[in-house]
Length: 185
Image (cartoon, rainbow, N blue to C red; front, side, top):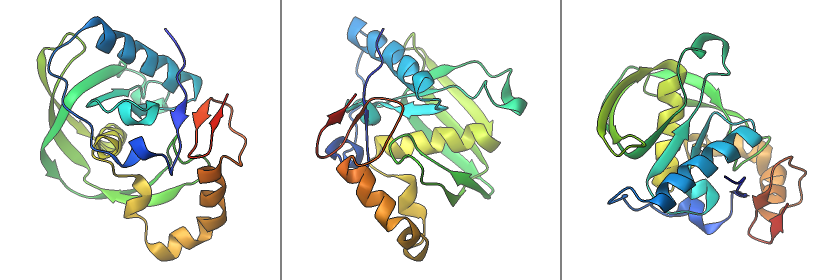
C-alpha cells in the first residue's frame, strides 16, 4: 500500500473522463487500497481515481470520521452510475485537488447509485445528505468535472489568485501532489 500524489487543479487527468473497469484484477485491488491510504493521509472523505492520475471509474468514500455518519463503513464504488436523483441541498464543498478553496454548491439531496463493489459484485445504494454529496462530487471527478464548475464566476473571482497558486504549485500542502508544473512531495 502506498500514498499516491494527488493531482491538483490545472493537471490533465482532472479534466478527462475515466474509463469503465472491465474486470477486477490485482492492479485494481492495489489501486483501491492505495486510494484509501492516500485519502486518509490527506484527511479526505472521498477520492476519485482521476485525482491520483488514473483514468478508471473508481471512487473511494469514508465519511466515518464525521459525527453523524460514524456507522457508515468506508467503501469503494467501481463504475458508479447515478440512476435517480431527488431534492436539492446547498452545502459548502472543498476538494483535495483544490486545497483551501471552499464554496457553496447545490446538489441533489437524495440519490440512487448502482455500482460494483470491491469484490466486483453489482450493488445499489440509496444515499442522502453528506453521503450523497460525496458520491456525486467524486462521480463528477470521473467525468472531468470539478466542484468549482458549479460556482458562479463572480464567486470564483475571489479565489483567482489562490487558484493560480494551486495550478503553479506555489502552495504548502501536507500531502504529496502533482501540479501542472511539478511533483511536490
